[in-house]
Length: 392
Image (cartoon, rainbow, N blue to C red; front, side, top):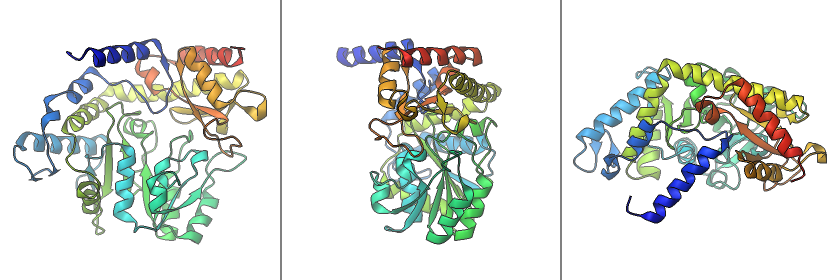
């Protein structure tokens, strides 16, 4: 590279990644093949529109890439092209969720999403997001005692408020989700059921977590977390009389975006192909085993694990513990100084500010990619405990 300043920063970031223990739940390490596709000459092609329906010339190759990527996405999740369609042009998860709401809900309509502090995502209608400014969020949360979803309470809210969309899927909820109950709730109030499986996509693809596809109308996902691909998004929509695929496609383009990033789509296709290999199933099962080992050891060491454990790749730790411990911000900063990267995070019914909350969120996907197993995560738990209890 001729740009010495950028090359220096790239080297510094690579060095940081190599010397750090990465426990960010929404990060992973991609393969060299994914990186090669992402940095390819496909960057040069502007392909506004959809396969066989573009607004520019020279699209013979990228149309084949588009078709291949969509076919791989459906195949990975065991979906029939007769029953499901997939849009692969979403730039990342937030634009994808915005596109879905744009397609399904009139401006000012009601959308039902989980409280941010209970584990929901900004784009599920939180007031700071554009989704909370264009639509009215009807929030739901977890039970105060169990810190798990209260489906009965959720159903009462849904029947009373009659939202146009119910969003199931979360950014900081560690437990298994009963998609069938969500379907029943959506049917009871006449809502679309949209599942955001961004954190769970790799686990679902590898058969380590229950699939939402038998129950959802729309499924969105990022591709860079447990799916181990580039930063991008997929939007799956059920093919039926409601014409959902056409509505989604129009919402993405021309509704929100221009030409797709074909290099990004190629990298997604590579990651989807990698996720079809037998080793990927072993990987995602190990991800969950590692998370459970980490949670169990931290609990033994005296830290409060939100909801008592995890069924996925992520863990929420109450580091504040009613003032007996350390704030989430301080915990994150202390760990980073020691080379362990986590993120501060609110916990259910948090009394502290999101800027300096009561907990941290930990994920095991990235370090499992590096080959770590249960015994390694037990040692990581002990390191975390020692660092957070130190006076530094």
